Image (tube, rainbow, N blue to C red):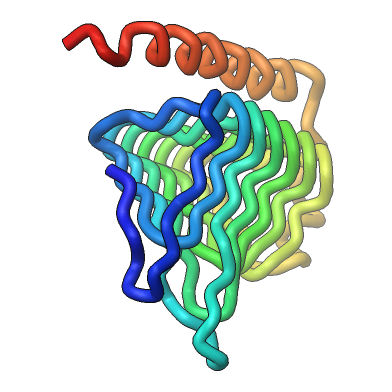
Length: 186
């Protein structure tokens, strides 16, 4: 469902993207080429800043937002998801937040007030807030990172972990094409 926010902003969805009919996109949301947005995802940009404006939530080309993901941002902040990134089932991305290109965010993870560098992997059930994850880092499942000092204990991402992110992104690109092909069958 595509909805206007109280400020009058309407999501802009590229014609090559696929948004599941059960997903909700509200307000100043930009969805770029070949993006997959799965069932029951909620992407909502509706809080105004101190001058009455609003920052956008941008989903980069070839990325996927999987089932039950929630993306929102507080007033005066934005969320940017880079190109070719995967946000797995039931994750929460709350702005201010920037996720780089080719990033994998695992199931049920929470990101808030942070930057995750390109090529990084945040495994399942992790919490990342108030820090800047450098490019190419692997954050193990169930890890809580709440400061840049916490990052010093984390091992950089391996080639195997990067290929996981790339294979998930590729699988979801195929889903975009498949679902767009059959969307009017029922």
